Length: 143
Length: 139
Image (tube, rainbow over all chains, first blue to last red; front, side, top):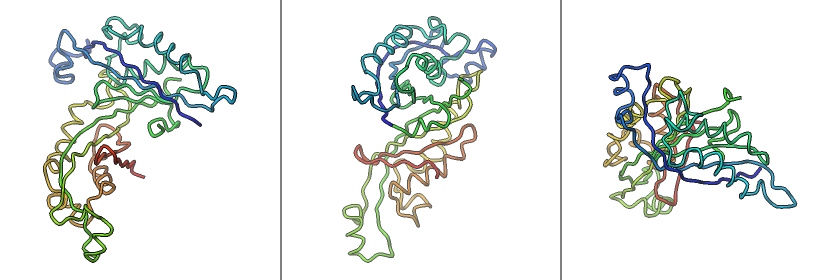
């Protein structure tokens, strides 16, 4: 099995606020992330696909194809957007790293037809990321 | 299908500490042969980079596995206050007996951080320098 990883970067704004909580609760739980007008990050997304190289091409999947999928599914949806208001898949969810990584997984998995989506790692900053993978696939430990 | 997905949170911390690799049961020559410069008598230091991963269910009301403020304050209290800008050999009881190699440091840090009550600790990875890293998953 070979693991192939493609990295992209996008910039987006978000705000953590649960309308079921009081303003005080939102402030206590989410801290600065609850500031009313939101804030932004430069996100780094690493997408890992696992598979056996096709003997005729030597590739697990064509990187161009992966690049196009990422452009269409992630960049066009999220880059320079407000995640709370402009990404329908995140409606009703707090746009944390955990939830964004899961939304990205669900967007990408059906589109990747060569190899299998193995891991989605989303960095909100160099010091914070979320991983999403199929339970039992050993995603976090496989590079 | 999505119930089958696993989410983990990765967080990076930094601390600077000194250590000396020395086994009192070895002779001076053996210590010098085994540990090289790391056996120099007065120790030396590193800027350690600590990466941890935790897993758990994402709480739908917060979107979080664990509140980052809780995790950060736990790591600060249980680890960084004692390790950062200290001598591992002199200031951390576990290293009175164990050699403070980065392997043992990973194991000691895992032992401490697995007590975090709001998520399951999956892995501790330490970069001693940009060229060396060690990972321990508790197994």
